[in-house]
Image 1 (cartoon, rainbow, N blue to C red):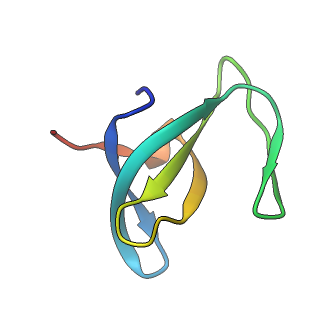
Image 2: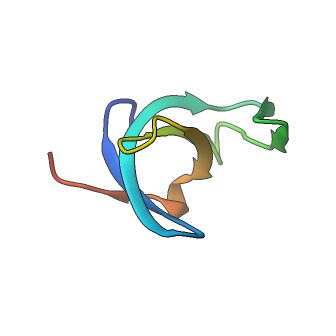
Length: 67
């Protein structure tokens, strides 16, 4: 997966979709939550198409969508 890919992911309200806007390979903080990331296990910052909200997910939590 790479920046610009359209993906879907699960939320408490159901599945949503959006775009990968950033790939992180070092520990970081987003929306007051701490995330662990590395070259081997990066986290992807995704932006919801519906709300514009951003969240961080591991690749295993994302499903790539066809453009």
